[in-house]
Length: 83
Image (cartoon, rainbow, N blue to C red; front, side, top):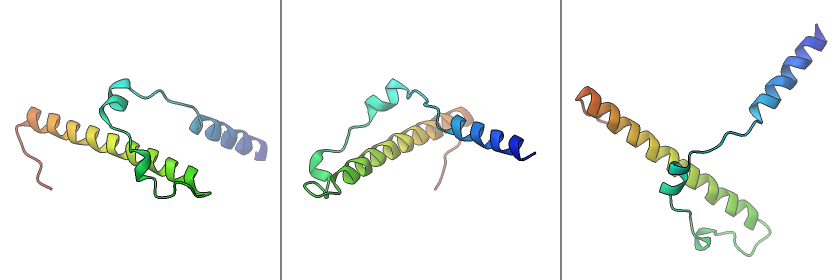
């Protein structure tokens, strides 16, 4: 039983680590943050600042896609979304 649970956990971890290709349209629409926005530039934490900027760019892409989807749903249903 323990062996089965261990195998299931290993499979779940491996499935979570699989890479998924990103749509090219989504990556082209967001403008990357410039190096000037990296407040940690020149410090040992500069790599963290770069990763933080990448994460912010990804969040911007997700927000744009969510807004686009909301506009499409509103157009299809004829309603407006009031936040």
